[in-house]
Image (tube, rainbow, N blue to C red):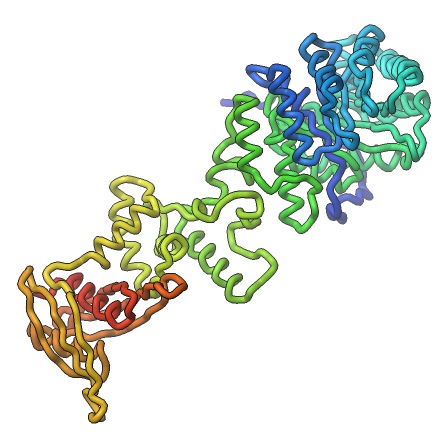
Length: 555
């Protein structure tokens, strides 16, 4: 049994008049990608310089205006990467690079050496402020921890004075979620007093969920409390850096935005330490699905996946939101039917608003295809099979036919598992279009007997019966009725046509027609459909009759 008594609840803050539950996200935040630092350090095989350059260019293409490029004082490869970006003039004028550094003079000196030639940069300093780390890692008092942040800020300010470009300070009280909010505010205020930000030159206070420690509402309360209590709030950009230890990284980010955050640091697909950072793409697509411009160029998810998997040597999970191969797939028959009806309703209503059950967005809007939406297995139903037939092959099966053909596919899926659209079409051909034994329609001649009130159509039909060619003539009140009468007489059987539908399979002068005949054997009561196709609608209808006769096994 799990020894749950080893663990204690993390404290919450008292915020009885919280405002965030009544708010909605109205616009995209400032996005900052930390893929090249936080994400890269979490890879089993970190990227080399050229791979990092390609990833940087991908982030620029996606529209990120703030990109953390690494920890240039930590290693030569990190230093060299930033120098390559500068020397090869790869940093666009509207992109601000961000560098991470601890509050130590020799590390800051090295960092500013790496930044030489950069026009605009964010220098991100941090130190851990949590109760646990103060106790077991640093063994320092609150005042000593605060002084680390203060001294680091002073150093950055001195270096920034001598730097020819623009320097923006970002300070993170690391492990903010495990820090008393009053103390986190005290440290941030001390940094603010040294840096002296203005409304034109703001400071970034980044409040990270370095470790998720409680439910998302608790983080939102912490952010709202800080947002309310910062002095000179208009000189501050309030940033969050959520991780995903409890699997709620996206939720805490969205609630943090409701609580007053202006900026989000995260990674593509949530790559990061432990269970990862917040997935910026999921956040952005969530906004998109609510009619909010995410302000990122993310309309081709497949291109992003390809680059990410190749450069990071990691796979995007099949069920990953928006990006997974299976997320726009429905195996359930009821889901398939609802998707089919939803898409039909949109087309019929010519709606400009996307509203399809089980599909929160149009897959085509992010570079996905409709083809993989519905997949057929033993759990699928009649709606899914009908959807495949119409979407892939243009056959609009009559509603009464859905179950009949789905039962055919069910037998196959129980034997082999998933059934591909191509296999479904092969079964359709074998069971309907190509079923030519014992009866095979060859040709017919239709004559109009306009001088008669009834039986005003004469049909001369050539067909084979068990391979032997035969001919009959018959009359009726139309081609279908005439052939029906002739077959009953020729074969000595009695059947009734219950339903008839037709439609065009494709546009243009060479369009083929599809005809569907539902028939009942009056002797046995058995019913079935037959299907025929031809460029001539009469011929398609007669082929459908013969198809149904063969399925009823008339001999």
